[in-house]
Structure formats: C-alpha cells, structure tokens
Length: 452
Image (cartoon, rainbow, N blue to C red; front, side, top):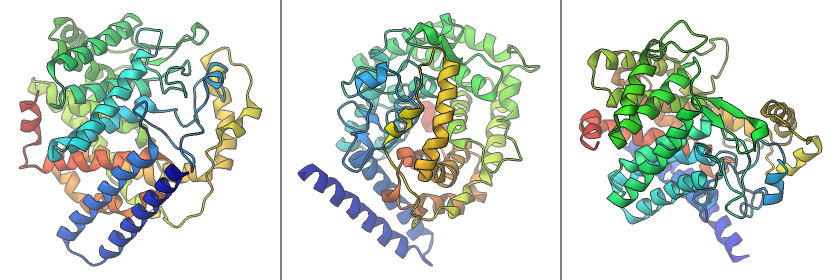
C-alpha cells in the first residue's frame, strides 16, 4: 500500500510540475523556451523510471496498470501463446525495441551530466538487452520481453526488436560507460548473434520451429538495407574482423531480390512513404534513420557518404511537415485506456504458423482499439510527431532542423507526460539528446568520431 501511495504522489507531483512549466511558456523568449524544454524532458525521464520501468529485469514496459506491472503475462500464458504468439498488445511486447533506442538517449544524457543516477540507469537498460539474448535457446533470437519469472518469453521476435538490440548495445559499448572486460563480453555476444543471423541469411529465427523465421534483414526495402548494413559496420568496427567489412561492401552494392537497385541506391533514395497517408509509421522507421546516420558517420569513402547524406536529407524533408501534428494532442482528452489485455483472450485460438499468429493479432487489435481508444490517439498525435522530430534531428541537416525548430521545441514541451498510457514518449529524450549532441560547438561529427 505504501508503494502505491508513493507512486500516486510521484505522478501527481510530476503532473503539477509540468503544468506549472507550461503556464510559464506563454510569451517567453528563447532562453525560457530552452529551459522549458529541458524541464519537460527531465519530467519525462523521471516518469519513465518511476512508472514504466521494470527495475528487476531492466526493461521498459509498453504500459502498466495503476498499481504497477500486474498485467505482465504469466509463464503459463506465454507458453500458451496468450493472447497471441507474437506477444502483441501485452505490456512486455517491445522490450528490445524500446530499450535499444532509449539506451542511446540515456547514454547521451550521461555524457552531458556524468551523474551516478544516469550511469546506473544506462547500465540497467543494457542489462535488460543482455537478458533478452541470454533467455533464448536459439542463437540469434532476441526475446521481446520476459514473464514474471524473468525467463519465460513468447516465441517470436522481429526485425523491429532485433535491430534496436544491436543499435543499443553498439551505442552503449561506445559510450565510455563500460570497462574493457564488459565491453569485450558485449562484443562477443553481439558477434555471436550476428554470425547466427548471417548463417540464416539474415532471417529472424523463432524459438518454436513451427513458426520458422519471422521476417529478416535481407529484403529490398530501405529499412532492410539500413539495418543490415549498419549491423555489419558495427561488427567490423567492434571486432576488427575483416569478414564483416568484406560482407558490408558486398551487400552495399548488391541488388537484393525483388529490386532493381543496389542497397546503396536504395538508401540514397530515402524511405518511400505513401503521400496519401496522414501519418507514415515514423515510430518504426525512425530507427532506420538512426541506422543510416551511423553508416554516414562510420563510412570513410566520401562518394558513398554523399549518397547516405542524400537519404538522410530526404527522410528529414519527408518527416518535417508532420511534427506540427503535436498540436492535435489534447492533454485534457478523456479517451479510455485499459491495461487488461486478457479481455482479448475470448478471440484466442491455437496458432501453427506466424501467419496464423499475425491474423489473430490483427483481429484482436480491432477489439483492443475499441477497449483502449487512447492507444491510437497517442500513436497518431504523440508517437508520430515525436518520431518525425527524431528523424529530422538525426539528419544533422541544419537548414531543415532550423526550419522546424519551433515545432520541435513546442512538441517537446507540449505534452503532459503524466497522462500518457504508453511509455513511447521515451523518444522525446532521443530527440532532445540528439539535438543537444549536434549543438555542442557545431562539432557533432568530430566528437562522435573521436569517441570511436
């Protein structure tokens, strides 16, 4: 009971702090706006760590209930594939995805603050990623999350889980937070999984053989190219093994199946978005821009870097006009949210392939959206604008960044984080610290390369 009272009091305090800061924003100058944004980010950070973090396992929950993470599927439910084998719609659905991206922000926060609390939090996030590799029985498999026993997990991972796992540990290994022994162990784990994925032609293995492989990195899309090539670059830089560099150069100029263009050309063209859509799943494609930035920074050949630069700029231009959608989010909205994913179980049926699991999960989504309309609202008007802002920030293109600077600042200070049902606002920290990186003496690239 005491823990519950503490949690509620913390959330009320954060809400009051943010509301007070929003009031001070009216009519103030840029210095006050910068302070407002910084305070808002600090509030978001604190709420993530007091409300959404599984401190025992070091993993960020998608959502929790009012008394804590009691909605986590039990080991029995995981083994029964409830509500579905993909683990979609449960609170431990995106541990590798969220931890991997958020770790970048926390490492950057530590770089600028050098405080013990941030250091311990970066280590906690990294330990969660390491756990998600260790609990698997299959080489190359990265679990999405763990059950209440800290071990049991659902049988399917995905590219959206596996790539952030590599990205997060890459950023952590380069952060200056790890000693040589720890860094060596992390590199060994990354190479073990990379070699396994390479042996599967970069397919994503499932823990249960009936599900086969669920997606992979060898496709013909922008996402496939950016993620695969950046993993190869990470591994070459970390290990010094020429195998990874040779493979990188082969894959760079290779024309993947079902494409007429090499991966280099695909990346230069940017992410292809459907212009008829109001939003473009920026929340899943922002990691592709992060991957392309790493490629740009690690590549030494100027003629190739210039092609990567084309892609970075094109993605930023596509995303920039969507940042203003933050203003459509009403902090006073009363849309409903329920953490009780077990309401989806009446639709459950056995699943003998990933296709059947996907079909079931899609059916459950219709019900889930009706139970929790807040989910779609936060996706459209919080997750999408913030991830669009991160795509712009990751471009490093100062002209594009300056053209939407006011929208980015307003977005970062607009939301009352304490009203959020989902933890996906962690991306606000990614936006803030990416921008902060690039503003330090205008030497983001030089500082980055000096640390490699």
